Length: 515
Image (cartoon, rainbow, N blue to C red; front, side, top):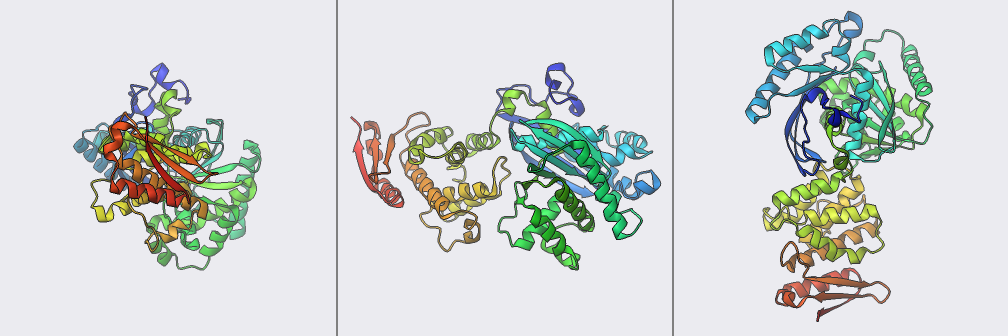
């Protein structure tokens, strides 16, 4: 698989079949992928929007399949037993969901072990699941494509760490370039025999070699893929008392990595593990992984570090996407899918966007897409109890599996939707999250929420706008121009919402009937 011509040539890789048969499709059929790693075995069942698949089911079992591999050359017997049982469970689940057969890929442990082929044969014989083994460069490429699924057009360096290996891949102009693999997986490093000084020198030497081979300039963005990196990010959140624990798109600087390394030293790892909701097996590898990350950051000197929850599994889906589908915005696609599935009046989000956008004439394309996302999501939580609808909207936006969203943008989106249903936010249990926004952004989110609240009062149908807003920022006047057939929709509640919107802009509101 070279990442470019698979769907055209009929080579569908581990899937063995086309996943996206229609480039125009907005939804996808449910598909299950098993990732057999050196440390864990995971099943993910994807569903939902074709361009932004959601996790219908996600289960991970820590098996440590690669433990002791460097010394023995074979898979860990207990890990092998646990992995086989896990895959058997996943096969049964897939059958119950009606999505069999599963697609399974294996990485470093299975490809390096002398009994890897025997393990694959055993799994196929006992569970019916065929495991496809990918090499290190392919692993790096698929991980990088997983990043592209969430961030189209990304550039920088993707670093995917597993139990027995660590891969690097270069991203530029939304394409995967040079990629390398290394033996810097923490499960393998745990078997290193020697002094602390020798251990550090071993890591430093490999990273220096990777840097020389990659020829990467400093100042790029570093994308982190893999469970050990996510565990470190979660600990960094705990260290900082960070209010939003969504790992995807969490950002750190080089100094934060060093600070977290120091934070771990001398700490009760058991207590910290419980605070951060990490497994015992995962936590045992963190002190090793943080040394690798610290050395990596010291040598490559990225301008910022971003955690990606997307990796190989998502990269396999991206592999099959037609270019037309890849070019779509994953955030907008996910929101369109949610509107079509859950809104009372699917399609009205587009009308609402056209209604509110005059208030944001200076918004750049990044802000415009968040405004569009809010309009598409404005009504998807209508089934929630009215007393809690605002909170449900906020929780959904800030914690949902949405790609292409920075943390600040998540909170902006959530706050706008909160104001879609509530005029107040002071004293909310979300006050600490609001701190991720500037005063200006908090105000803009309030204006957007109030504008959506007004627009929702004036709906006619999903095709026809009831009127338009005219915002004169210099004169501080806001005009609502209603179409004649929308006149009956204007009443006391609509008038009150219009006045609230004008007030949030510090403006005088005026309403007139067109024609």
